[in-house]
Length: 317
Image (tube, rainbow, N blue to C red; front, side):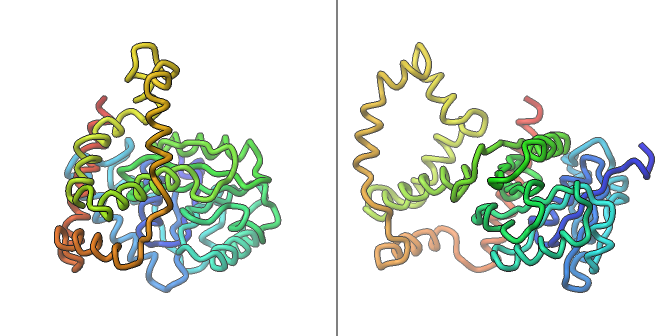
């Protein structure tokens, strides 16, 4: 493919998520322009991406068919929005989670892109009808919510604005699939989307069990990491149920549905995450992993390394 045939994606915001998106898109052979309104930030992001790609190549964990040098040749940095958006068919916004800021970004973006350009937000907690409320051409807008870190955790939730065109959802699904992500389509917007709603349910009951003195912080984490998470890494809760009864999902609910309903009715209200009882949970966690940057950074590096190995295992199977 010649340079003139390479399609352009603009990533707005050069923080962790913006850098991750840029790495994902260049791994798929797209030209990526990364923009940040803070002078020099986008250039520093490119330097950081270069370091990461070289390390990934050395570890034989680089995504895509191109070498690190070839991928880096597709990446450029910008402090000025207009040239950053020139020629872009897809725009991935990654600024911080403040509604007014995101709305302003998309108003500005709309001034410089063609009518056919798809506008996508990485928001994790703002519904698209709010994010895109001030955009004129809302049919080309959607949320593409990744899971951190996107380079190793491939899921991306595609969430439509009430006016989003079906063709925009389809085109984004195709793009995400092409660059090696695992896109899931939500049929309508809902607070928390799917990932955070499921995650919130797990957080609430885990917190409740620790706070009520049923189990320790360390052991509730083991319930997931050495139990449920082992199978959920490869199959989800629906398939798990389907496989856990001799005749599938309907049979599973015949056997266990009443018991599940009984447990759900015993859960009680949402736990208090801020009062005195909550402080005991935080203290217990902080004793296991202290909150200073040295300990937290070391655990994050361990997390990313393990996710990298898991991603490789999933790819090989």
